[in-house]
Length: 217
Figure 1 (cartoon, one colour):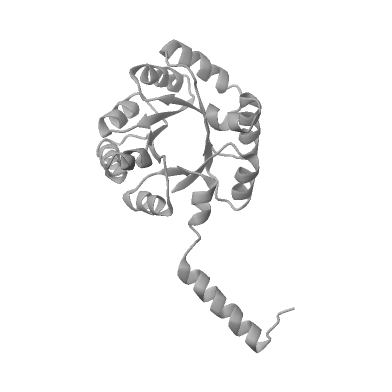
Figure 2 (cartoon, one colour):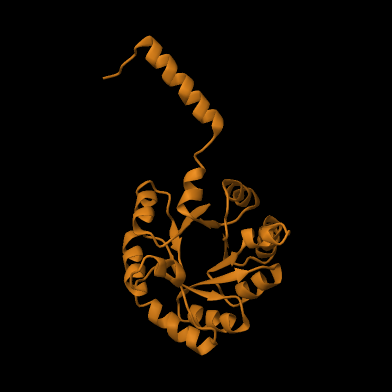
């Protein structure tokens, strides 16, 4: 499974990238705005840092304007994936941009039917939002399973990019049911290494080493 990091913080991306934990990046204009820097400048810096796809989101809602923005975004770098919303206009933009050879990430997906439409429109990635479904008492993981089944049934090449990841359990469940990609904040990716028994075992080990006065160097 691929790990995309959901942030615009360059230092956080670089740290995880150095460990081989970054297969791509997802970001949006609001995330970049928080950094106080120019959107295109930050996006270019991220693209130069990582080898994988970098999702850059359009701000328009009209198909023609989305297409125009997408064409501008893909000029930033070869690894740009244009992120469009799962609306009828977004699907039109997806079809046009993918037909021109560009990667497209169709986002804000909340149903298997929507994911089917995105695949038919040629989306590179479909982004179902797990956490937001959980927020309204629906099981976001059921959606991942449904999309996986439908895509496998018909051989769609669109990758399932699980978004709105809130916890390490979300990551584990996505891996179990077959999501191609997860995108998560740096803190969630780092949390995958945590386990109380690891902490307990390390503390016991260090106590033994100290008691025995063992030193390697």
